[in-house]
Image: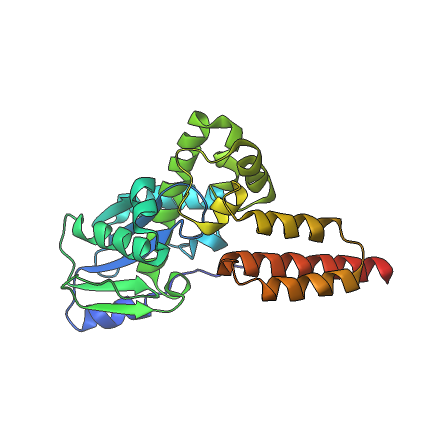
Length: 266
C-alpha cells in the first residue's frame, strides 16, 4: 500500500494566489517547561515549495524531526530562530507574553521581510505585518508546521547542551518539562541556574510555600481515611492565608489521595 503523502498548504496557496510571495510561518516551543529558554521559529518558503512529511513537531519521532529540520533549513528561502533566555522569562513572569516576544524576535530577525504571517494560535503585537492566527496551526499549515519543527529541534539541542553542564538534572531526557524524575531532582537538588524560579510551581518544589501548606501536604500524604480528607478540605477552604496556587495544589493532592483510597478499598 502506498504511503499517504502529507502536505497541507491551503492557507499558503490562498495567500500566494492573492499576491503574497513571502509568507512566514511562526511557532514556538518550551512554553510549558519548568526550565530552559522559550524558542520560536519563523520560516519562509518560495511559492509552491513542498516538503513531504512535514507535520506538527509533536507528531514526529525525534529522528524524523532531525531529518526534516535539516531539509527545512536547506529548502527555506530564509528562516530565523528567536530565543528568550531564562533571565528574561523570570523577569517577565508571564509565559504567554514570553512566547509572543520569542515569536516577534524570530520575525524581526528574518533576512527577507515577510508580507504575511501565519501564526500558531495567536496574534503577535507590535508587528506591522498582516497576519493570520490559525488555531492548531502546527497541524493545519505547512509553514507553521515547519516552524514548529525548527523551534522544537533548536530548543531540544539547547537543552541537550545544558544537560552536559547540569548533569544531575538530565535535561537531555525531559527537555525541562515536568516529568516525575525532573520534579524529584528539583526537590532534592533545588533549582539550577536555568530553572524558571518565578513559577509558583517551582517555588513550591523548592520549599517556598507557606509552612501551613507543607503541614497540610503531609497530613494528606499520611492520611488513610476518607472522612479525615474531607475535614482537611474544609480546613483548607477556611484558611484565608493560603495563596491560590497553594489551595489548587492541596485540593489536587486530596483528590488524588481519595481516588487512591477508593481504588484500594474497591
